[in-house]
Image (cartoon, rainbow, N blue to C red; front, side, top):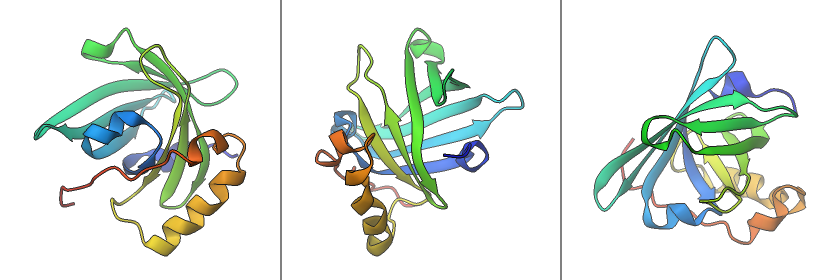
Amino acid sequence: MSDPTPELDGTWYVVRTSLSFWRRRTDPTISYTLLPDGRMTDTVLYRRRGRDRVVLGLDSPATGGGWTWRGVGATRLLTSRWEVVAHEGPWLVTLFERTPFTAAGLDLCWRRPDPDPDELARVLDPLGEMAAATPYVDRLFAPVHDRRT
């Protein structure tokens, strides 16, 4: 796949995921900001128990493709590797490797929290045939998006 870096810039809503982390959290978004040196800042926002939460990270290009995320602040000792496995226009699919704290998983992100159902189906249907996504397709669920955009 070609380098999607310029298109990653901005806010993405997690609309389907296999990551259990999102089962007890609402309104998940990920915002990427490109830096001049080829890295990106990575801001994850969500709500838990009625309170806004934020996780900050810095993404660096990884050897062999993908990205290495490193936490900022309280999470600075944590790292994670991830990659974009599919991307077209308003959606992208990211795959996360297992870490000591999280399972491997897949996120389908969209530029809005409520994609058109037909468009969503056109993206979800072929995921089962994508080797990298196959282990996660049966576990996909829709995180709750309550917040108005």
